[in-house]
Amino acid sequence: MKIKLYIILSFFIYAVLQNIIFGQGKVKTPSFITDNMVLQQNFDAPLWGWAEQGTKVTIQPSWHKTNYQTSADYNGNWFVTVKTPSAGGPYQIAINDDTLKNVLIGEVWLCSGQSNMQWALEKSDNAEEEISKADFPNIRMFYAARDNAREPNKDVYGQWDECKPEVAKTFSAVAYYFGRELYKELNVPIGLLHFSWGGSPAQAWTNPEVLETTPEGRYYLEKFQEKIKNTPPGELPRNYRDPGANYYGMIRPLIPYSIKGAIWYQGENNVFEHEMYRNIFETMISNWRDEWCQGDFPFYYVQLAPYNYSKPLVGAALRDAQRESLEIKNVGMAVTLDIGNPEDIHPKNKFDVGKRLSLWALAKTYGKGNIVFSGPIYKSMKIEGDKIRISFDYVGSGLMSKGDTLTDFTIAGKNQQFYPAEAVIDGNTILVSSNDVKNPVAVRFAFANEDEPNLFNKEGLPASTFRTDNWEIITEDKD
Image 1 (cartoon, rainbow, N blue to C red):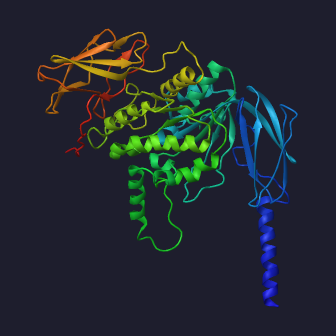
Image 2: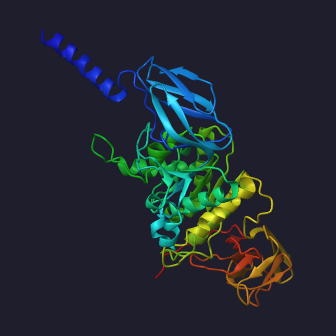
Image 3: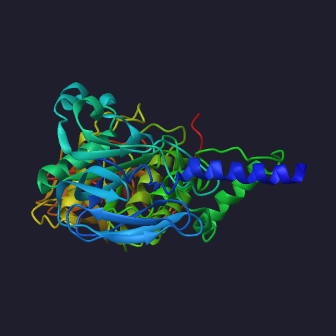
């Protein structure tokens, strides 16, 4: 009798739990597939959610008469792709008995990284004035709550908000300025998916299964295993810095929501292992692109600003790793050497950061051909006697110095000892030399953590850190 009662109670509890999770045939969607959302225009946009096994799901967008039908599978999952029109709205999407309201069709960008991406508009330069003007109902931001996990989450917490002064103050400033510039130029709705976490390293945003395929990724996974090997039995503690933690907690649940591309501001928490950053960063980009199944979607990122780190050269070395990552397909880098603060790792000028990211998107993604979108990037070197000639990409209408003479160039011979150098603009190249180096073989530019150089193109965009050598970078503790 007791066994029979136990079985009956078990089935009752199971039924109650099923009803709580799904309701009687109730259809659920993730928190970002809801009222006020923005879907990517001219796209087969994925929509998905959960319901009781076998529940028939009918989706009816108001922009056309097509019904999309599917059923929840054995695990209670359902999925469809819906063709979206060109930019417009607001629309509605009926999903069985529920209706998603105030839906816009436009351009959707993922905005991710650590604290400088998370940094709110209300804490940035000119906050009061900018917030008062932030009245753009066709710009929407989904602000994802921070969560990390050991296994893939199914959903994230958050909501879509229209850009109005009362809520825009909490928006990511970089994402807001990026989106605002796109909106002004494209005149279409803009959706910004804000998924960031201050203090997080790049490996935390990458699938651990993908990290396992690279030596650098295995290094971080092995460090994690070493950390937890003496943990008592039970649930493992979670930490947003662990490999894959934010990928599982925040990125995986978002995939495959339709996006145009991604912007990224991160790197500060990888500077002390800068030699591994390029591989980890490029692995993360490849991982996201593979799992979104949208090809090599645009990925634009911010090069770190000057900051007085506790070890010399680490910031410069990571900036140079970011520069080297420009070699991969369909990426771009916003340089911030002129708008940082060596004494503050969180520079308050977020407008120029968002603006410079938008220049890449407008020029390279949206084909605005009249835009100079980058400052000078090192291209090649040529030894000419006791001088080295440096050539650049992205010189715009010419190179210029914001000051009497160019600063922060150093030069070395085969002994690998770098000396301050004289640098002179010669057309679209720069000649670098020093009386201390008679037979130069290498040049470095802005290769100290806190360097704030004065080389720009005439459009006012700063040159990136670079080095022409591949020598080991020595980063010893400061006295």
